[in-house]
Every structure is written in C-alpha cells, then in structure tokens.
Length: 80
Image (cartoon, rainbow, N blue to C red; front, side, top):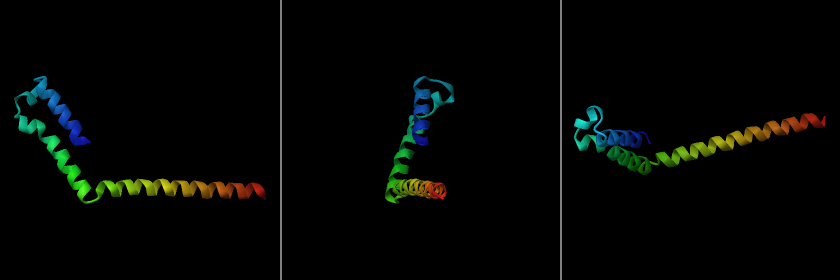
C-alpha cells in the first residue's frame, strides 16, 4: 500500500511539474508501482498475505474465546 501511495504522489507531482520531481526521469517516478508489483508477487509466493490473514483470524478467535470465558465466569458468579 505504501508503494502505491508513494507512486501516486510522485506521479501527481510529475504531472503538475511541482518540486524536484518535475525534473526526474519517468523511470524513477513510476518505480514505486514496479516495487508494489514485486512486493505482491513475493508476498503471494511465500504466503505472507495468507499468513497475515490467518494471524488476524486467530487473534479474533482468541479474543472471542476470552470474552466467552469471561461471560461464563460472570454468569456462574450470578447463579451463586
């Protein structure tokens, strides 16, 4: 995501002829988009995106489990 934001920022600056970016080569201006593509290829190839998604799911599951245990403890205390 960061590479895309940087790419859009540089592209906008180049198009508007603003700042030092106006003098840069188009290769440099468009390079963050290439880096984003390479990042996605790497992340997909090595399972990084899937692993992160699984970690988020595990964290949600654990939070639900903890909440359920706390609710069970509270209901057990009320019954006494």
